[in-house]
Length: 145
Image (cartoon, rainbow, N blue to C red; front, side, top):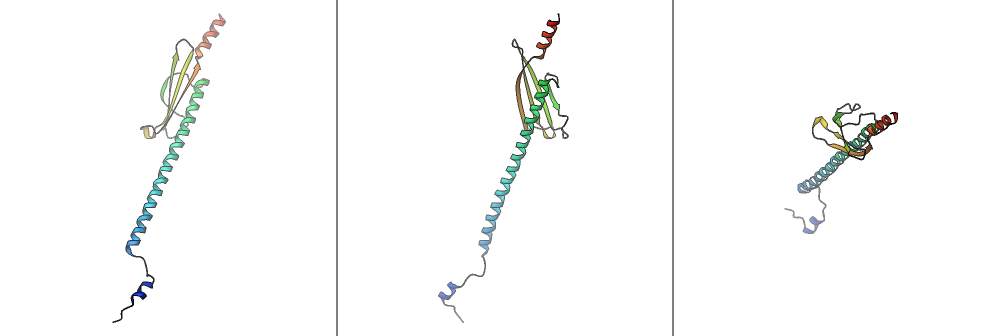
């Protein structure tokens, strides 16, 4: 029987990887892939939320502009749909309160995105004080008399 000398067996290179080394490398790879996929998913959720918030701001400013300009009647209303929304998920609510004695109206507009009619996942609120248009009408009537 031939016995290899100890000094010769130490200097030979290994022929492959052990099972333990393969399992450790696969576990490290899977852990890295899991964390990357989680980061991508969170980034996509944040992008969608930012896009919805931006659209809510634009829609809210548009409704407020129409209310102040007189395109929409300056009155309190709720759960109004947008005409340009094909999905029907966007609604707006206006709340008009008069401040006694100073002739100002507090106009509050809230725009919400409710997917499937459920809880809102994006909303924006805007408050503006405008002169009561009835004051101009009353002043014109007094001037004509």
